[in-house]
Image 1 (cartoon, helix red, strand yellow):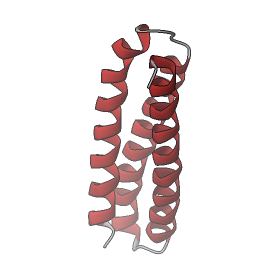
Image 2 (cartoon, rainbow, N blue to C red):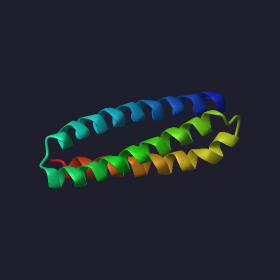
Image 3 (cartoon, rainbow, N blue to C red):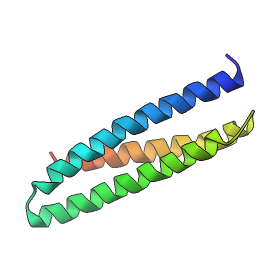
Length: 98
């Protein structure tokens, strides 16, 4: 697989996962709306964190898309860190909303 093919496959993987996390965040937002007032504030904070991390991952993905050749390898690590942080944030919010 060429570097360009590898980059394209990775971008598609991240985009698909972003769509998944967006759906999960929307689902959690709906659950938060039905919560008691005190809990709703805490859930909102959790969801704000998840949305912020999602936006960071989206920005890093867009930066990576603008890179060519081996330069994309340099930003791939940042994308992977943002991916991990978003995943932890969504899981934490989901666990709190159970």
